[in-house]
Length: 203
Image (cartoon, rainbow, N blue to C red; front, side, top):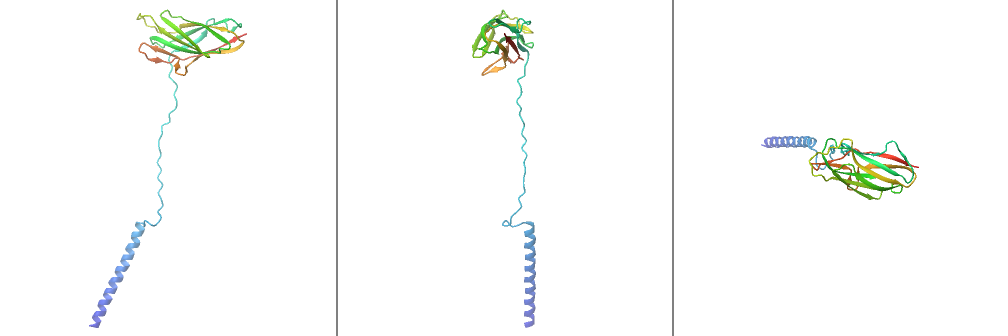
């Protein structure tokens, strides 16, 4: 009877030992597969590349032209106190024009603005001088439906009076403040022309 009890005790001891060993092995394997939350984990770095489109400032597309030139192309030197005459030349790139604005930069210490006259019978010219800038606004006043397409056309005649010796620049400005040099066609579309500048010498 006592032998039987010893065998049962040994049997339970073996089962308990096997269970203990099995549980220990299971925990070790589980820890290897799933590290404990308390153990430091190596952070996996994540990189995200943000694609950005670079926007470069683009120049305003220009069509046609408004150019300033000396009326007498054979003269570039002027005597102090003499009148300097300019002609505005325009090309509207096949557009029918109803109005245009021109901004002209000059040195008011060296020149006085005298007059501006439209070279187009169907257009009226308005001139304004502010500091070193002459602004011309030219508007079609004729009610006829004849298209006014400029192609190397004389637009206006300008007169300045020289009053100081030196070499000076007269240049058409693309813009100044809210004002711009531009054509306006019959559809009220704005066309920005190519522009130029010229130098004048006063002796």
